[in-house]
Amino acid sequence: MLKRFVAIDLETTGVDPSNDKIIEIGMARIVEGEVVATFNQLVNPDTELSQRIIDITSITPLDLIGKPSIEEIIGDAVEFIGDDVILGHNVAFDYSFLKVAAKANNKNIPNKVIDTLKIARKLLPELPSRKLVDLCAYFNIDPGHSHRAYDDAISAFRLYEKLAALTSDEELINGAEEVFYSIKKTSPITAAQIRFLSSLCAQHNLTLEKPIEEFTKSEASKAIDGILSNYGR
Image 1 (tube, rainbow, N blue to C red):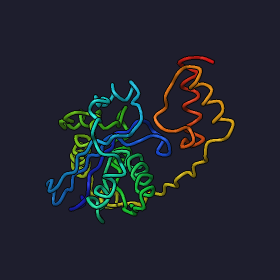
Image 2: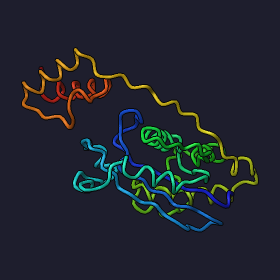
Image 3: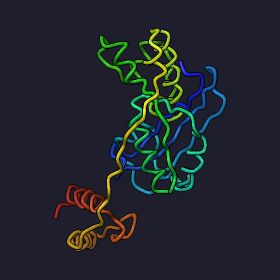
């Protein structure tokens, strides 16, 4: 297995890097099989958390009050990663969110990655599930607080150790790969959306988290759908 890498996991408000936000970053630098440095930070997304995300992560809006924004800490996160290979479980998900946040703040993450999910699929095709929590159970790895960023990063590291012990295929275990994630261009809110969203907010006496003019087209669509779902026309 690689002698040096950064194990990483993120918790987010959803699954779309273009519209959803990071709420927690957990990282551990591993050298010769030992944790030598850590990065563990809650992030205020400046948006509401769905009940589903609260239930999954146990992170509540109160936990995020006073926490730094992603703009405030993405530089530190990128600096922590440095030139190391990034390791994670379904790591393309975490990488895509980091890539979007980094680019929005004039940073770059060109690092190669190792995906424990990809390795597990090749080495353990017979398992009914290769979710991180299920693989931890299979290998008797203590998952700590599952679906919290730092604990999941450590679980991915421990899983990597277990998977490496199953094979002599060094290319599979050590073969860091590039991740190609194309950041979607965002379109500004349309005039029709501004009028309709403004009308809905006035009708239902609602206050949005930011000025309507700052919404993207996609964000406006989600906001309109949410209001119509909760309040009707």
